[in-house]
Figure (cartoon, one colour):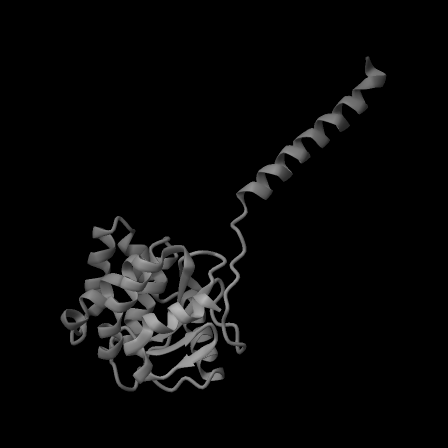
Length: 213
């Protein structure tokens, strides 16, 4: 029996390794394959809503305090609702701090919420209430209160807003925008092609055309 013990141990180790390998393979998140324009990579992983392998990728460079960004937000929500698994929407942080005093704080709040798995919920709240918080002096109070309503940890949100990880994500998105020639918000790329501001009125037509290609 003693002579067989090493073989039994080795066999057990191999079985557990095999089981662990299968579990790890199944538990891995599927890789995200997006059709975006070449440039600096931006924050990784990106903030994406939609399928992992979409037929169409909408990449937005946005400023949470930018009024035009706020106006186009409902349009994108409708795209998300209507196109579902065919279109992925990527949000890139591009706060125009020289124009909007609270833009950076809002970006930090959204990214901090993302560390608790709630980026898009905070993203939507920030845009939906843009007119309310834009001129507040202590805007963090607004975002911390919303974090509580969302079931997040408000103390952690405040702490994460100042974290290196959040700051690095915002800086990486800004670097990507600069590498692509982004100078204002909102700026959109559809499957890597820059969409002119006047084309936004025909966004659904552009998406439909891209889906047919």
